[in-house]
Length: 231
Length: 83
Image 1 (cartoon, rainbow over the protein chains, first blue to last red):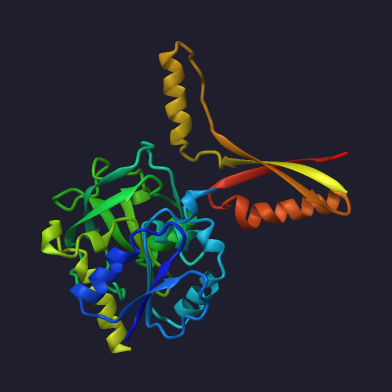
Image 2: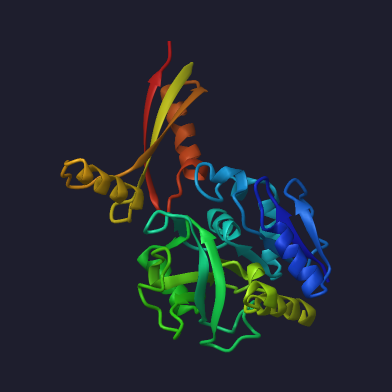
């Protein structure tokens, strides 16, 4: 099994993800510079966070138009799991792999802090090791994380159980106060219609070891690895 | 022929514009009452094309493929021929 971690100019959470996959989980993982186009050797892909291309134009928009995205799409079409974290989520929406868009936080400020997330579905390759309703502590670090989709798309996402995580308070309630960025319906992460592509604004790689205050994010990577092993 | 296109990208109506809202508040601090403040981005693109019609078609494509995000943006294009 091998998982590829895509590096664009300006990615900066790539090494954290590599550390979690290799050192914490003991999985074979590899950094992949975005100019590489052949991803066939990988069983899964992580598009990590950062500020690809300085967030020029719109966060994620430039990276989304690089040729490697066609290879990531092809891999996703085969049913292999793909996670986009933070800027990676923005790249996946900009490239059309995921629905919706991520716009400027309702209070236009860079927010870097712990958040609570509720697991909305366990029927994805990334959440199978959770129980529905689990409340996780995973931090965010973004200024453009305000999830937006038109009414039709939103009802489709809800109807197909494509909402993976919602921002909640400590008690698991999706309140306005618990919503750090104004995302519609407190959405923190969604999956594709086939459920094998996940985008989320919070950083599970920053919550994968006890020393970091939370290990809640680790199960996302563990679920992904288990899914790949079962294929 | 050489043309200059001015492309304006705006958020679709009804979408939140947190930057505009912040500017509106700052204007209030200076004593200016406004109904609303909306932000937009403008791009100036110079290109060669056979006709103004072709230039418009090309810039439309640019807007749809990259410069705007059709989920959240409207765009408008104004074109002029450069001497």
